[in-house]
Length: 296
Length: 264
Image (cartoon, rainbow over all chains, first blue to last red; front, side):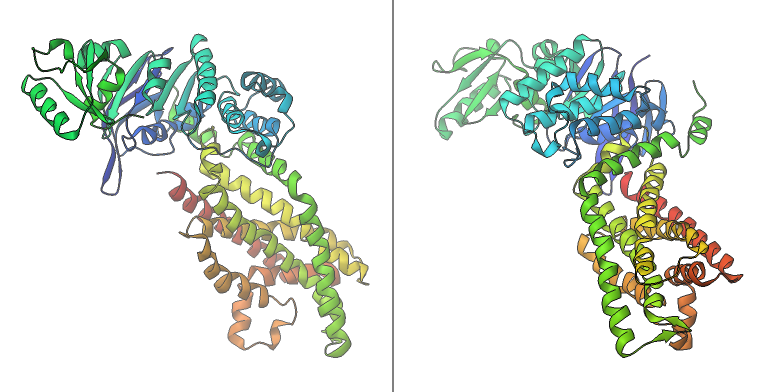
């Protein structure tokens, strides 16, 4: 039984269709990265899975529970780590965890809190108020709160958004640890490196649908080839190079101040300038080609 | 596969969910209880000094045979209840939803909106029911004779506070911006507070206002508190039933409005 099954899920907000016939299956035991630009429908998908949004059409099953009718039972078995920090800032670290241990009906609240504190590496700060913690500590606490009941399925909604690289790396090691313990994880993100680093498979989402899905290596091989040539120069030159490459059927994408000729190993003579920087094709190339949005 | 409808029906209003949410309120209350308690004691003292002693020394000696300070002191229970229930429910709910995203966190757990609203109402009811009794205790300090009927005052305050908590939560789920609460306080809270019989008997008002006052839950609470202090009448059962009905009505409205607000 898959941990998550969505078939033809649709969710509209007035004239906007945030999720547009989404098919998504997450087998048990993997980490699936839901990669997409802002506005792709990732957070709405997360809310559909917790029953905090009701689909306008489609079938949704989470851990064998049909949504939205059995959403409460599904939530009892899943943990959610939200994008926004919604901790109780005046309350202590351990009280924040204890409240959610009770909400999740954990039999031994004290033991669950202790485990969560160890996971978040906050045991020494257990009696401190949340507003005394650093940003990284708060994000670790947010993660621990979603795991206080040792759930089978974990939803991570942009787990490291807004964090500096050092804290992001700390969170990644925590998430890696969860993967190694065989948890099923659905992680939404718009950070390419995060998806590459943590996900067993990546589903690229755009405009409310999954448009490609495979392991990172398979996505790169299927959509970007083996090499990418980055060309720098004034706009006029880049326009000329782009036109030549596209005449040969090579996809060209913006890359900050440069352009990137994807699949440059297939280029005929003259398509790739001699001063181009040749590098291995990346998931970022795939993301930009498929969504048209430059990645962060 | 479990029968989902039966599962949902069996697990409605689970004590564990309600207790968990209330434990969150208790944890937060531990950080601000001193200020709340201080103002709950000081304000009735100030009111009684100003209105009770001040007016009774110059303008009003007695109302219906009751010394004015005791008339005001027993009436102020209603004041304490509405200001410790409706306003925290309105502003607290709005802030938790819009700015702190607290309800998103709670509803990601196995808790539904009905349990959430019920827990919030119960917490406000208990707190307000407790603090609502302080004016009565202060008035005893100013000379009111204790009576056995006063032991029911916490219950009266609790039920009334439940009703106003539901009202406040429903309003919080309705307004688009926080400053729109000004309409609610001007149109509802202030008139209810003033036309409850706290500072003057409603019998002196025009007939229309007297009829409207009978529909004011605060007026019913004032009469019940005075019944507890000076002797109950048979009609007090109807007053209590009215307050219970008010609480049930606002509870259902609050659940419906919050569901529309919190679930997309």
